[in-house]
Amino acid sequence: FALLGQMVMISGPNFLVIYLGLELMKLSLYALVALRRNSSVSTEAAMKYFVLGALASGFLLYGISMLYGATGTLDLLEVTKAAASPVANKMVLTFGTVFLVAGLAFKLGVVPFHMWVPDVYQGAPTAVTLLFGGAPKLAAFAICIRLLVEGLLPLAVDWQQMIMVLAVLSMAIGNITAIAQTKLKRMLAY
Image (cartoon, rainbow, N blue to C red; front, top):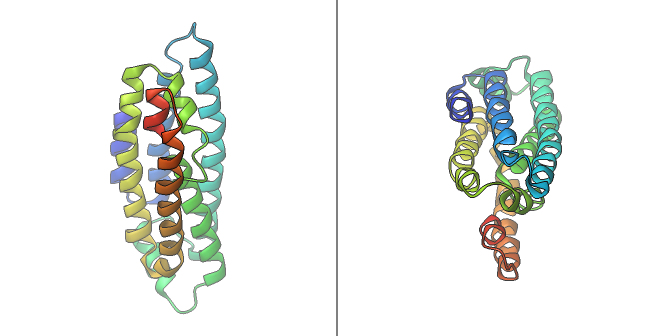
């Protein structure tokens, strides 16, 4: 189901299908983290992942709703056309983009939205941790490309600066924090 969610998410033509694919993937991953039912660490990691995933979904949905309010459509190509038009409300589009990038940053686990990643990697079974480190991150990166480049290219001036700051902070803070870790899974998470 996680793989199906990733495929639906990556191939979705509008924001609603992309969101449904994302949630299908995330619900499957919540269950995989809690696979060891007798482990309190695994249960705690699953709960933390679920709560912070719900918060990230809220940011993402709020951003999508603001973009819908400004453009009147959920289709990626129509959003691009509407955002490029001179009558578009740039303030609402910019705020929608900020919330969209924040929701995607939660899903990618970048600084400062990374607080769930080390605990979830540590609490999940090793095979699930390996899955977390690969496919969902690749799918989230593909969604960033689809939503930002394909859907919000006219607003590139706004979201490129946010992505640059998030990338630099993630690399710097992640690598510095990883040095102090004593557990391999936590080090890989950072």
